[in-house]
Structure formats: structure tokens, C-alpha cells
Length: 315
Image (cartoon, rainbow, N blue to C red; front, top):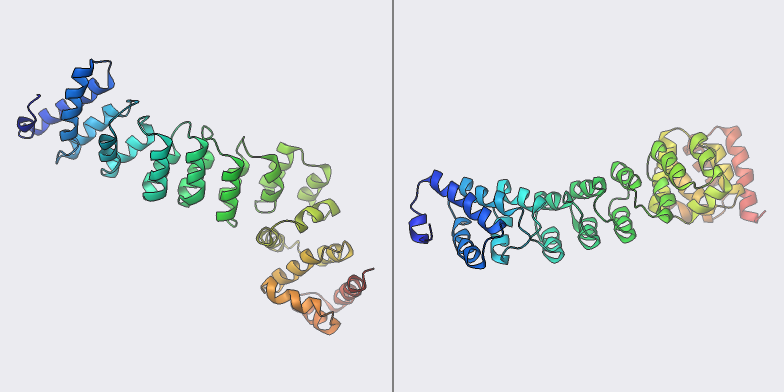
């Protein structure tokens, strides 16, 4: 069995049996000399033409805490049938190696790493930073992984409109409390209410999320949120037919100019950057047309124009 040249000429079944035996020797408490001989044979077996032989070896090596780097590299770069189970279970890879996998390998490898038990913060952040969306989703559902505040923030930066992914983030037990309010603007009402209860945010927030009634404390927080989050939140309101004249009046009366501008932009399907200078002109005729374009009746437009004029005068 120690004759490597003869090993290549054995029947497939024999090579499979030898691969399993070699793997068990390496994984056991065998003597240093026995392990060295086994490693030498393993280096040949990982290059065997038969997938079944390489698979038999890899299955035994998954439990090893240490393997030579070149052996690990061969297994990780093998076909998915061999590499993915190894990536999921092997303890022979350090954080630096796993980060390299995340940043340089494909989606399947990233997903496999994301399922590992006890993922460190460094590897977790690499997944949040560059991995495919499906790998990030797997990570969010992996409660054994350490997801830090910087990782959570990176997910929100990369996937600001992916509600299902952000809902998974909202359910993590290690979600920092100061990110909860930002996520509320992005997720469905169901998960918004979940976050309110989880972090005991405030009665006003709970009332808001339950009834879609604007509260000053909510508006002040929303006013400071990134524009993409504000727009996402307002689009949710519009989808629920809740972005109405009462909301616009509330924003104007509270002098939440940015929210008011963003709301108009969402209602007429225009970019915030093109609506902002129009509103800043203070032209009531133009504003009347915008309110009408947004679908408000003439009587409602009249009320909104009064509030708009007061906003301009600073009253």
C-alpha cells in the first residue's frame, strides 16, 4: 500500500477502500511516522481520476483539525461533490483561508462556508462584504455565526431594497439595537412590529406601525435616515394606499422638508433630485400641478397649498 506507483494501477474498488483507510489513519491518533506515510499516499489519492476515490478520502478527512495546506487546497478546489461538503464541515481551514475562499471563489463555495458552524466575525464580515445574496441569506439564518454591527451595516448598504434578506437580519439575536430603527423603514409591517417589541422602541413607534399614523418622534428619526431608506419606506406606504394628504400635511406642519419632498417624488414617480429644486422655488402654481399629478382633488390641493405656503414662510 506504500508503493505509490502500484496504487495507481489498482482496481477502482480497491482504491476507494484504500482512500477511506488512509483518511481514517490521518484522522486518528496514529504515530507521526504512520501519518507521514498516509499523507504521502493522500497526496496521490487527491489526484486520482475517479471522483469516488477522492470523495472517499475527503469524507474521512473532514474531521481532521490539521491537514497540510496543499491537501486542503486540492480538496477545496475539487468538483462540488467533494469540495462543498468539505468546506461545510472541515476544521482544517483557518479564518484567513476561509476569507480567501469567500473573496475569490464562486457562489456555491460562498454558500457552503456560510453554513459552517461557529463562523467567526472576520469570516462573517467577508460574507456580508462580498458574497452573493444567497450566501448572505444563509449567513443571516445561521445563528451560530458571529455577525457584528459592521457586518449588519454592510448588508444594509449592499442590499437596501431586499426586504426578505433584511427581514432575516431583523430576526438575528445579535442584531444591534441602534440598527433596528433603520431596518424598520425597509421591512414589512409584520417584521417592523417584531422589531418594536424586540427592542421595546417606544409606544409611539408601536402605535405608528400598527395604525400607519405619523408621529413626530417617528418623523424626526426618519428625517435623518439615508434617502434610499426614506424612499423605500414611502414606497411601502404608497403600496398600502397610505401615502395620502394627511401624511403630506403632517410632514409640512412638522417642517420635515426632506420627507415632504421625498413623498412628492414617490407619488409622482420622479427622482428626488429633480423634485427638490422645483419645490424650493416656492411657486404655488407649480405645486398645485404637482399635487394634482399626485392624484389629489382640487379641494385637497387647496388645503395642501395653504400648508405649503406656511412652510415657505416658516410658520
